[in-house]
Length: 68
Image (cartoon, helix red, strand yellow):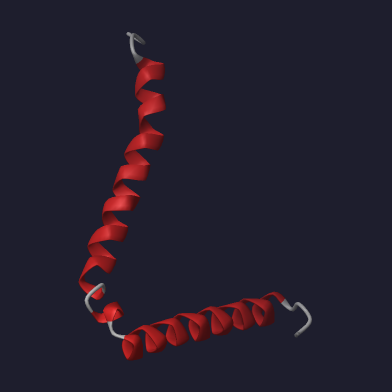
């Protein structure tokens, strides 16, 4: 009944990595031609950095932590 149980359990991390990598590649591959131009690359990096700062400040405010 439990033949191969642990083999199946140890396959799940590889499956998870495969799914996440496939999702990542299919999400960002259409953006790659846009990143070849410096103007759109700078805009994309600025948008990413601004989103990260906004998310960080929002979570800190929600948790009641001191501001910067």
